[in-house]
Length: 114
Image (cartoon, rainbow, N blue to C red):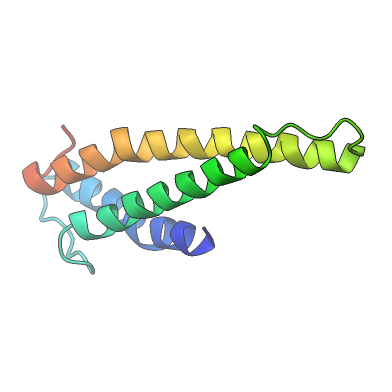
């Protein structure tokens, strides 16, 4: 997930920001270091799928984050934090897959956000 974050924050997001600024100024879009914006977006979407599948497996193995009756506080907190992480992951994936990525594709296609 660190590699995913580095790719997003170090490459994709700065490119989207520069492309938006250029579109708003009526200028030329920046040169993409990755060809079409679809290339890194598809990679991100694949990684989102993998992360979601991993969290689904963790949820299944932990019986929906249900600690045993005799679990210590640390064990219980760990399960709560895993569940919170999964919720945050779902929000992250939704925002990117359903809002940012379609707008970034539109920006590349039309020179502005749709």
